[in-house]
Image 1 (cartoon, rainbow, N blue to C red):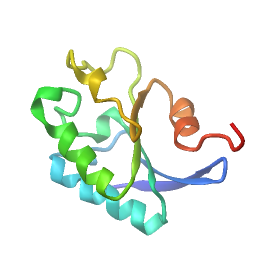
Image 2 (cartoon, one colour):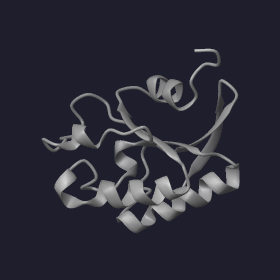
Image 3 (cartoon, rainbow, N blue to C red):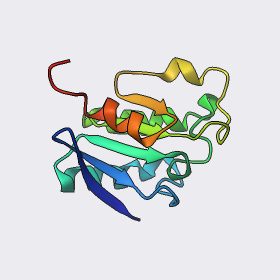
Length: 119
């Protein structure tokens, strides 16, 4: 499992390899937590290929389990999904929270994870 640590506007972000599966099941969120702890970061950047196959289907409960795990440790999560690559369940938009956002580009995700100072 490949994670790298990046700096964006002075904030450390743990980023997964865009082509690698990081979470095959919801319990695998602990691997992301380990990477965050190791990097002394509370920000994570994943891609659609990194999350469980049913993450974007709200009825599966997988996103909820993953987010609950990350919330306990105050880790913010941005997921990058290129347009047309993922089918979201009808109610997935309701899941949006202060600690999760889905973006079309890596740049947008990084900007949300590390907002510019003074804004």
